[in-house]
Image 1 (tube, rainbow, N blue to C red):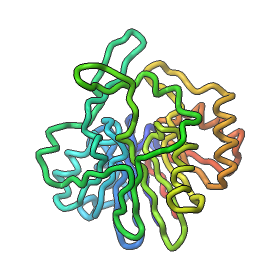
Image 2 (tube, rainbow, N blue to C red):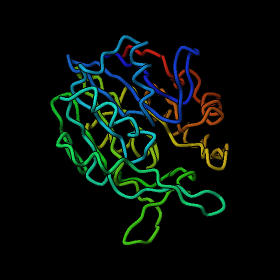
Image 3 (spheres, rainbow, N blue to C red):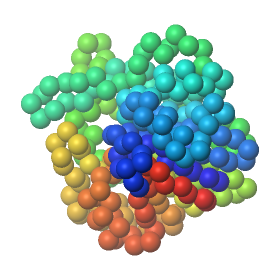
Length: 274
């Protein structure tokens, strides 16, 4: 399996654009996939620099209903007119962030995209094919990111805490090798890994994605004691972890100090062969 990082908050060089967002290009079993599309169309130029032809992408997966993961979706759809786009049925809800002064900002997806018939709407568990499946239902509630607290959803004109049921995760099974890909892990990366194990009955060998351990609105990271507990739980599950985006560099550095070579950071322009 080949993975190319088309967008992340940082990059390997000035040759690549960056933004607060995530976009991964994946080749597996003859299929070409896109996991998220970043905040804007900037990932398109990065794809050219990485020799990725987005017109050949077969399937797109949007991890959840936030702009930094689906903001580039319209630009992609204008470039690629055939790929099916898999989103949770709640992904086009009304999602907001709130700053320390209480000001709210819409951070959801572009609802005008619903005029297109390209979408496949998923639920708790959705099997795409023999190699790919999606899941949104997370049973555990341990070690939830405190950085979720400024994220809201609007229901019947009332702002309430986002429950993140619109967040889905991708399982790739390549000849028995399990890779789990998460967008932001708002439901807690430990809980997401455990739910993956419940589904496939074996721990994943690789886990890739953001762990949401940083709040950019308040420039706040998770406390070290929490990071250590997360690290210990992840180590117990035995995977190799590649994190990025909303984990935050400082949180990653602390996790690295606890987990050593079991965790690395991926950035725009990186290539992984798994």
